[in-house]
Image (tube, rainbow, N blue to C red; front, side, top):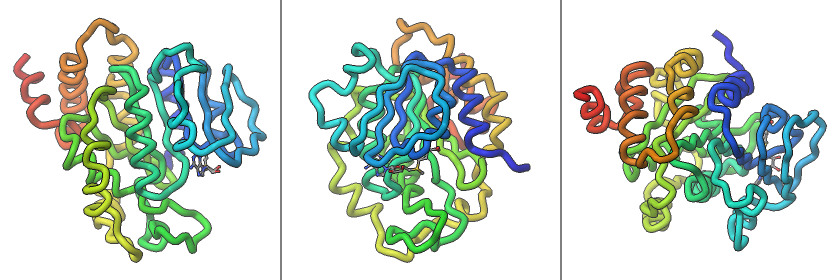
Length: 261
Ligand SMILES: C[S@@+](CC[C@H](N)C(=O)[O-])C[C@H]1O[C@@H](n2cnc3c(N)ncnc32)[C@H](O)[C@@H]1O
């Protein structure tokens, strides 16, 4: 069934009710127009034509430059992001840095969503762009998270045209990815043609969008008590994801603990 990515994102905004939203990669404002809360939007070349529906701080710069600033949370008065959408430069190392920066400025109940993790062809995934529609090698972040951050809940979602990746159970204080950044690039950045795994190309390992929306995960996060410790919340998230989306999307150990109560 055809499920456009912005329809999914719109539902995420409605169910999660984020207090602060981060968007990296704005272009015409199509996805930004879905936000109803205080928003920080970054793009060196935005050209907004969509009508916006939220108080937005727009920055005409790259995400790297923005996060090198002394206080990236200045526009939110220091409040972290509950929802981030990463849709900037579609090269693996840029997307990975965007994740590192977004998580560092996220709340415990935060959700980070990547666009374009399901290329339809190897050509579309090329680092050197030669197709009209282009995902680049953003898909490589999946392998990195699986290896270095197995405690996160990571759901690949079969939206059109090129999939979404939803990550939650975040820990703003975790520095594994930045500490191992050089080693990660050596292992996961490949020259073209990209070795895109078959299970991404054929979409066999993706969760149906409506199943994710109906899982209760977003409502759980929306209601999460700010006093809940990150570890406890991560267990609750893992239990919900394992029970209602699929065990493959939740960290095994945490899902087991949660199932035992
Ligand atoms: C696919 S478009 C974003 C589409 C938008 N999110 C939507 O769904 O309506 C990608 C955007 O990323 C921007 N971009 C490119 N490099 C970037 C960077 N280093 N930091 C932030 N944005 C970047 C481009 O200018 C482009 O407008």
